Length: 391
Image (cartoon, rainbow, N blue to C red; front, top):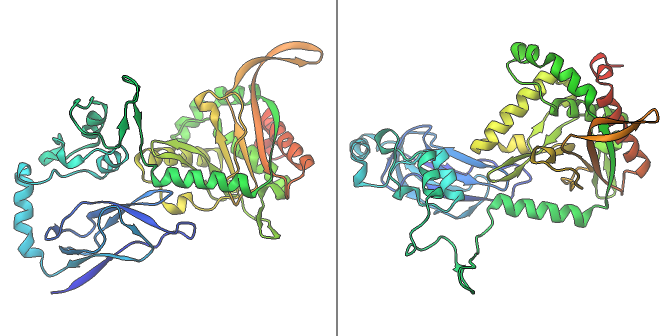
């Protein structure tokens, strides 16, 4: 017998604990090296914990739903028991009706989010594998009247139902951080408007050639990020953070780009954004969005950041006051671009206008700096040629 320990991976410094979701194996099951044993949910991401060696799972120390910390031992594998366990595992796959259904990782995450018991579903995949589509079908299908629900429901008057559902860890963490931000910072928001016509014209002129060369669509996010970097370089205090009685000025530009996902808002970080081209930025944003959808963002991608941007415009927002992502000191909110009447040279004209909002920590950023910071972003967007020519 040769026993190895299954440990929780090293969590980031900002993550104190994680939650075990559902074991994919039970005691006595064979496991293969690299096979996902269990999903671990932190306040940032859902991690897969693969087996580091093949063998048999001989002991589960921490059960589903347990709270765990970095490097905590949660199970044991006997690496010398592979041969004995291999035969029954193959048989179980050949006859899926004899045991719990096999579930794909993406299906398991979705089932956990919607409180669906994936092991009871009829799998449509190979060997009866339960897929993400199977779970979606179960979520969208109305439950029979006699079926118990996953959370308590009360119906005080007729069919006016109420349902109490526990927050996910990521939603709890979002709530904690937003409250922390409002309680620990002197948040103030200033606004400006920007004429997006020059950026729209530039994008329309080169978007086809850009996509053909770089393999990614040219959006507006890269222009906003480039403009923000220019403003951060001009006003370093907006890129700083507060630590006690000290102000930490960051000599790098790690921009967090807020992305909505089924599990909640996530903010992956574009490292060294000042060194990225428009194509680099668009590729990274597209990759972040795809991984956020599948729950594949890593803790490293979600940790750190010196400044954040949130785009409520994709949902139709006209104006908002974004909340700072601590320990950062400012966040830029961008919104839907709409045709609006504006005055130019004494004449009323129609222009595609976007309202910008900068929420900032007034403890270290003065109003003058905040207003000038937004003015710099406005100028960079209204004269994008200067950005491209670096003048």
